[in-house]
Amino acid sequence: MVTEATSLDEARAWAAAAAVPDPEVPCVTVADLGILRWVRMQDGVAVAGVTPTYSGCPAVLAIELAVEAALLQAGFEARIERVMSPPWTTDWVTDEGREKLRAYGIAPPVESTGSKLALFGETTVPCPKCGSTDTEKLSEFGSTACKAHYRCCACAEPFDYFKCI
Amino acid sequence: MPLFDALLELADDHLVLGHRVSEWCGHAPMLEEDLAMPNMALDMIGTARSLYDYAGQVEGKGRGEDDLAYLRSEREYRNLLLVERPNGDFAHTMLRQLYFAAFMHPYWTAALTSEDETIQGIAGKAVKEMAYHIRHAGEWVIRLGDGTEESARRMADAAEALSIYVGELFEEGAAEDVPALPRRADLRATWEATIAEVFDEAGMTFEPSKYPQSGGRDGRHGEQLGHMLAEMQSVHRAHPGATW
Image (cartoon, rainbow over all chains, first blue to last red; front, side, top):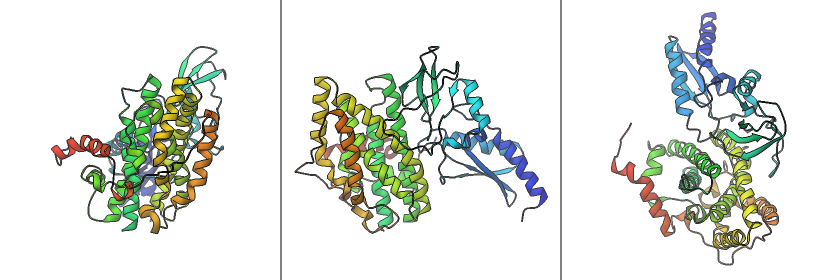
């Protein structure tokens, strides 16, 4: 049964967990990225559902520990549940998260993951610095699994692009 | 236990190929590829971990991912012969990757509607990653196949060397009686269409081998798998139970 006290606790626990920054991209929080799925109070324990972005994302454990630590620090008993299904997609990056990424110099994912997989399709990624769409892909794989590497042909800025999956 | 055996086959494919691809770390021909290879290795090792973890739960004997990855010998590994092939040159590695990804992408697509929720979850992540692998490897096969005389020769050599391992992809193995998993034989047409599209752009023609090899699903492997496992398992075996 969800009492008023429980839902207040839940909101407080969510706020504590949601403020945790992503270890690889510290300009956004785990809530901005949509990798913190939910926080529920279960028998007095704050349980947080966390989902990996990529199967082998090396930051998964660091994120889980950071969320757990944030909940403990906020005075909760805490437990983390790794949620695999449904799988994370870049559609879950919030509008606020996209804006923070752009301001940080990382081009946010441009298209919905619903678009058809084109074997050799190219997407147009606007430069996060000058906004030009005259950009070119340097590499499908950037500094982390979730990013590709691009260069702006207008302002010459090299930049990371948060890939759509 | 057909589900356990089938999960082990899948997990072994991903771990062995993930490890092989990771061997390029620090040795790739350019910086971008030096980043791409470990990224792709991580995808596959991550998928392997999820599969071993689930296999351990299905088996119910308390074996976890480390036990299954580090404490089984060569004869107990159930991976495809294709994935254990040594890296060779870059043409060889990229063609091996294309063959595997072009197979796993339709496999995971079919698994998205599996009756088993855990398999659905693993498939949901892996299918997106394999789409990237197809594109990345496909671009390299085209670039090398349709490149210089030397690169085309190397790609043709890779196609000849790897062709004998293709048929095994579509053999059913332990998954035959597992309704939760796709039937491999059903994926051949999709695989052939993907390869034909890439080969066509690369100016190559896919030639099926007259002398296909198999045996990986029964634990009959080539010499190189044992060497790879010996290296991969040495720390775990030398320091059992070590934590840090």
